[in-house]
Length: 156
Image (cartoon, rainbow, N blue to C red; front, side, top):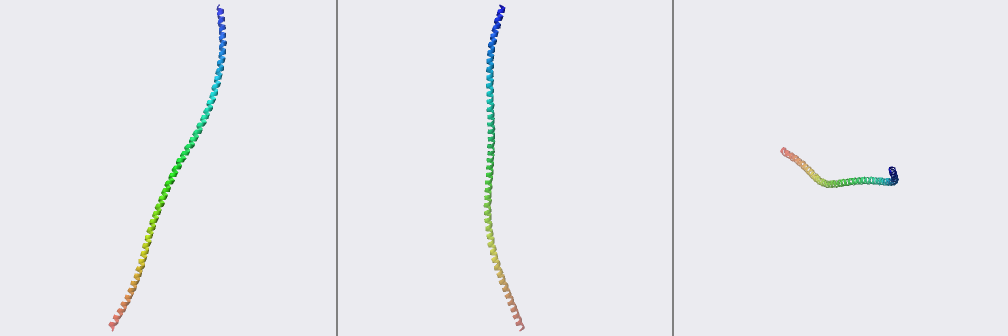
């Protein structure tokens, strides 16, 4: 009886072992399929990650170009502002120069008129001096004539 129970148990154990072995094979097959699916998904994730990294690199590159262009724009605006400021200064200096030049020209014209007047006055004075010199000479001659006449009359 005991032997019969042991044989029954061994038979059931063998059946369960066989059944478990079949279940185990199915599980291993499912596990292998799952691992293959996971590897495929991992490859897809890596591909997407690489694509994403490439896009991030491209975005960073474009952002750098955009930043450079922005800096260039700011530099150009600064340069333009400086040039405009310099142009205004040059126009202001030019205007001041023109005003100063006109002022100097007016002063030169005044001085030339004054010089002409002084020259005319000098000529007038020179003429008057010559006239007075002539009168002085004439008076000296008259004096000499009169002195000679007085001398002649005293002698007579």
